[in-house]
Image (tube, rainbow, N blue to C red; front, side):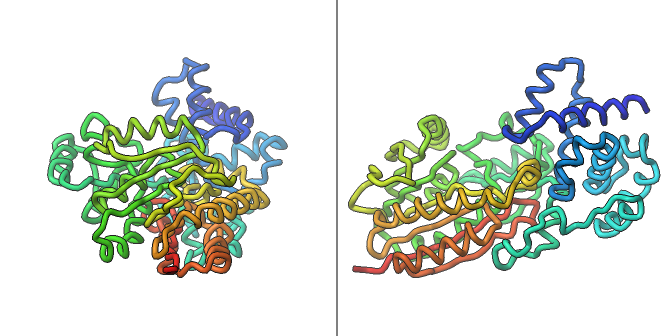
Length: 401
């Protein structure tokens, strides 16, 4: 039992010293590098405890973390209990009565914990239901925080049979989501089995679904399409556009030079050699984009990332409601500055990985009213039902002049 107390004590120390300024995964990597005594099984168990704790989100009063070590550990055990549906060694050693009930439905687990003296409610995890985008089921979204999302691969055109064969021969557990999408357990190592970016793209299932917004361009445009991926980041949406639309005249930009350097390497692996790129702060004017305009501008806007918090639950824990203003101000500036680069009859594809209405529908409403763009399609991609991220997309068209 002392080993499991040690796990809990170590995880408690990590949680108390972690301030949220780095991703938890990065903080834990640094912690274990400085503490070589922990073996791989120890690291895995301590990491699991920390993530389960942060999956409780706003249930936990941050002040209680430092006010009572016993209360902190009780919440850590509660996190493990809620987030697992199989017997757990830590629970068996420290609270065996809880371990006997891990297969209960989530709602009944909360009832059980309240009977044990912990004032927990599912809705307290994410206490802003009124701020959610349309069509999000609040209860299902809250419950999704207890589940680690899958790793998703998008098979690139022409490689499906080869990829399936390689994964099967390597005895990799996977399921087929649709024609190109595969779901794998989150920590699956695939780099030595398939060729990243050439054969497959590591891309969340909801991000893959963004391709559905491109149908109007695929169906109605036969000429070479000029595309500007203006917040390109790692280039996943650019590769998706190429695979979906075919031969395009591609331009990418980002605010960070280092990102474009990494993107260049990724494009090389993907076989993409013909494209233009530039560095730009899109929140400011004088953007060095092509003044003749583009048929499609893809804006995967900087956002709260709230649709990805089941992957990074520590971000929910440290999120403050007022933080959203910084993102909506930035989204307003960026979208206002890029609209002029859309050709008449061209499209703006606005994307976020946010669940907040102010970052989604409200920004689209502003674009429509301010620039008179026609809304073609708008919807939330509900990844919380698919062990995936939740995203938002809207396709708008600029009127012919």
